Length: 307
Image (cartoon, rainbow, N blue to C red):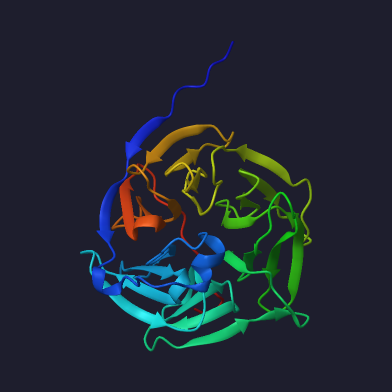
């Protein structure tokens, strides 16, 4: 009988923690709906690096975006009437943000000004967009999660083309969350949080999808959230319910486990550092960013055409 080799376990260490001056110890509509009314002074998500090595994170309940420098110092970049989640750079000065309340939003990191990028589909509001990834042609893939789950498998995966055409690729997902592309851009990985699994979505040359399958099955109280891919094609899966990050090979076998401290809620991740082989992970429950060094760098992230 063939037995899988036990995965290597690496401990995530604290890189930086949100300073007290930025913590909001007050109620929020987001916490009432998503945290059972539990007091939530912040909820970090959407980590992404700029070209100068600064890390940007979103704070969903209070509509804030922060910049964290290499020394771990925090600066408030933007605060607006929204609920920002996943983020990617559209160009050197513009973050493209999936905002649960406002759809796709552009945020100028120089001024903090937030402007709409795509608010609705055919005048219909989104359920609540969650995360995004861009490909080499300028297509934006993003998830529309809302409150979907196994009770209501109606979450969506969209592609927004550079010419403005919006394609609905999937509409039957029980809680679509993080998205990531394989290094060749031919496969999209989709975190299905309430289904506690990862879907593999082949992207065909004609723009359609087919033979979508379940790639990996997790377990625990809260399933996969943020995703990232390294240059070997390994998929990194942040699992907040377990407090760690899976590192999966091409057969979806865990070859590493990046383990957070007790009680950590590891929601999302990004590659950074001088050689882009350090993984930075948001621990949303504690307002902390964790990190560990790996042996392989992350894939380069794409931006919009002309950026």
